[in-house]
Length: 155
Image (cartoon, rainbow, N blue to C red; front, side, top):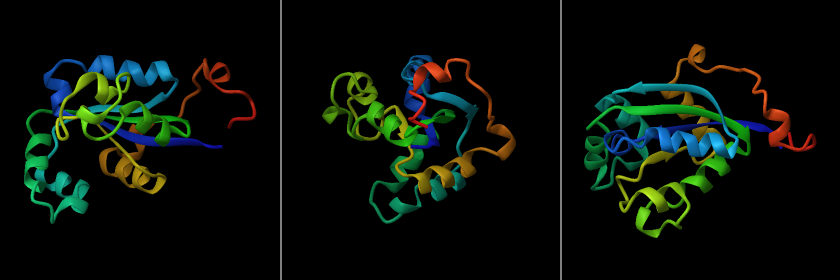
């Protein structure tokens, strides 16, 4: 198993509801390391690139409009199997179908206003991190609790 980096976006609904700290805390308590974090206002241009796979869907513009209503917080998180761990914490896209205890199961009732975006594969994570962070905005640092998060044969 290897350490992975992944992207999480705390969506505008999270910022508007003033629960960004709670959501970040969930990732930190799990043991994921924050390697990058910034607040930014997304533009139509970056959203058209980010959601290009949805361009032909009837809800494409609604998604982009929603993501521009307030700033987002972009996070680069690192851990063993971080992509799968983040997605498990987030729960299914539709908050109404998400299990209690997941982020979406605990904090939302919507398919669109669903608290976080999380990368779905190593390839997607690499592309998304490059889209939202400059190389100098992602930090490699030694977390003092690292040896207490994993057994020595897990990384």
